[in-house]
Image (cartoon, rainbow, N blue to C red; front, side):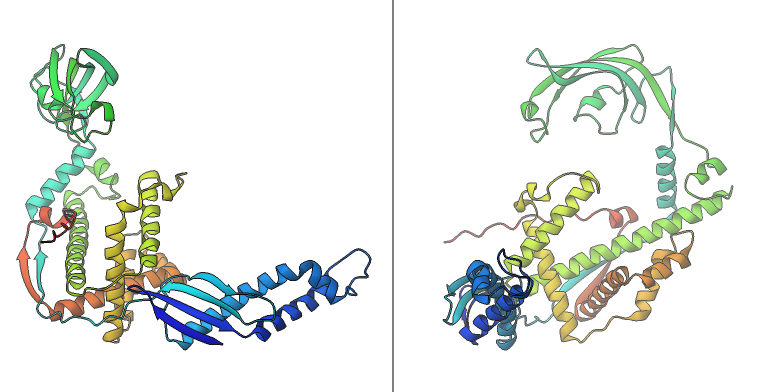
Length: 445
């Protein structure tokens, strides 16, 4: 077998493979003989069909099957021989597939990039630290109470946090519009349910009041015909109801899985959950920052095939997130451009993390794996059952092992970098990181 490789552009390679004619033809002859023993053709007894007859009738299809298998086998042999690492399946084009002549084809594919890791010692990292203070705990408990709050009618003017029952009709340029009318709708002032300005205009209203509310629809509003339009709403306030928070008692605690009628026990459980969330948030932001710097100091080409594969995963995740696991939506309907930048970054991070593992000969720390599994299991009623399940499910355990190995890479990079610890509030720590602004294209002089 003859193999020649040409580097075309970037990571793309074009490999020409020539397979001796006898290899293909002998495989075809063997397949014809096998077929002759099993095929049924009128006029011939089973197993007695002449190979010439079989070849004449089925030879073309048999040859195509053999060629497909030869391509698979020879491609694998060729990339092994040339020490190439394809990053996706090849596009194959026949050059010669005539019977009796050497079979040849070209395979075009991308390879993984060769990576020489940059020095990480000059990288500056801000590592946030935070703690759950008593004020944070009190605020969280109040939030939990508000989630379970009831409303009672109040004979007073409304204020933020009150629930109004309203009727309204909207007009644009004096004409009523679709979706602009409602009867008996409950609205909590300050919830942000309505477009900006609507809720604040109703603060101070009393039951029985009729008000004219003038607002402007946002320029990015979801309904195309309403974007940026000025609107007038005639609103009638039917009732004003004040928010009544539930008491901190056994009934309230039980809604959060706590059976004890003890405020201190409830607060301790809430604090523990807040601290767990805080630890996860701080770690996630730190990892995002460090791996972002890793990408920043290592300029590498990325195989388009890997990016496309990551885009497919992100599309599926988006469908599951917004439509649920049973959503009957084709992920390919989501535009590729929505996920391209994120997919490219994730692929770069994956390639670079793998290279750090390889360069430093890192092995998964089994003790950390065990600790991670136990931490995950601790949030369940029967932790040991969860631990046993992870260790009996190799796929799930593999995910934990990969996560731990990634954490080991994070530790190694932090040891190399210049790290500054910055104290932040609990609220800022758990707040999701702002999305990265798209990089501006440089202008040529």
